[in-house]
Length: 260
Image (cartoon, rainbow, N blue to C red; front, side):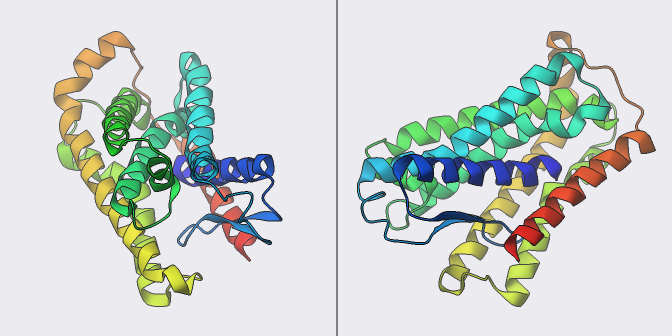
């Protein structure tokens, strides 16, 4: 969960930085662990975001900034990988998967709705190119997490259901909570409430499908992957679990405090 929630913050910071570069008036960030995360603007944006190219730059800035930092930090830490650093090691793989789902949402939105990747396609990038990167990021992110499964205390011989439960109590559980929250109380962005819940439903379905696929592929693929980059099996204890839960809780609370 930490890798996902922290990645959301970095993603929105990327949009914010692009707003400063483009001269968007009074930019700000709205964060919420269950609701819509977005940049908001306090003035007229017709000039700063008045062309397709400028909107495309703004749309791509968030995902690319998250990919750059997430993958970069995780790769730097990879040689010293251990269960202690698992939340940050997972950031790279989770970012690859999350941003690939963002591209899928962009494909669904295009051309009717303005969103990160639909704006990129509106600027002239063919949808086929986005589809290529969806597949590339999904494959890369999946292999990344498979290589880290020993740090989660999971072996190739473990039962499919054990692996599935470990994954389901992460991002899918958070997204399920988001769908329930939005269904019961709606979005703070009432004009786009149906769009927000649709996005969370797509993300939830994609996350469940992804973790089920990872749990299924772990046994046949891991022995070969392990010869490429061996990761010793970790025996998780409180020293590993408590800091990870604390980091997740801190980002969760930070988003709620920022929103309020």
